[in-house]
Image 1: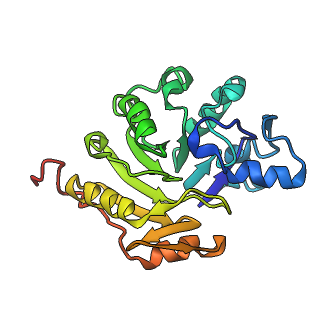
Image 2 (image 1 turned 135 degrees about the vertical axis):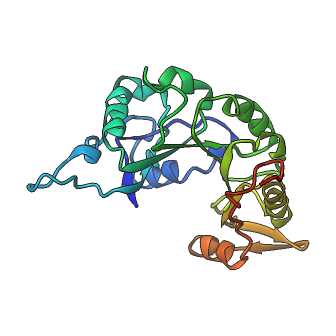
Length: 246
């Protein structure tokens, strides 16, 4: 697994950005997150060793995890990124975005019905944003679609938007003042995914986590491990269609 951040910096965009870890980390270092800059790793996917092999290994590559791949400020640079993604067919490039309405304005001319080596994750944090973004997302020509409910700050009904989706991720908010996450919300998402044969992953609890009517305050270091301990992740059956027929 590789990570590729061609640029850094971002702008808060919606409710889910309130306690963004990028902004918090930058504030501690005195860095202005709203200043969007190319990184020295911009050309990482096509850099080569002396023997001609790519430095970035084949496999999954996480893209722009300190920004948003569809950020307006990066419009002048994105075409070069698509060129590199096009070249590295041995990698699967995954990016997440809250700006899914910009997708069709940001893709290359040869995108067609999507590229096999690109996974797009649409991030939603509550029902309002789910309805707003997923109505768009569900109509887009993307071969590999994920929905990322993180931070999940309310119950979300996704069931009408799961056709063609491969994975749904749920995760809580991490901050001293984080909004609470209810385990019931997570279980409801899981059941929706099982009914529609979509893989589900509970990635992290929230700092303030409510289960069986009791609120737990968890340390940041324990959020992911506690989610894994729940054992509720679901792997879809690739031989079963959404309508339940084989």
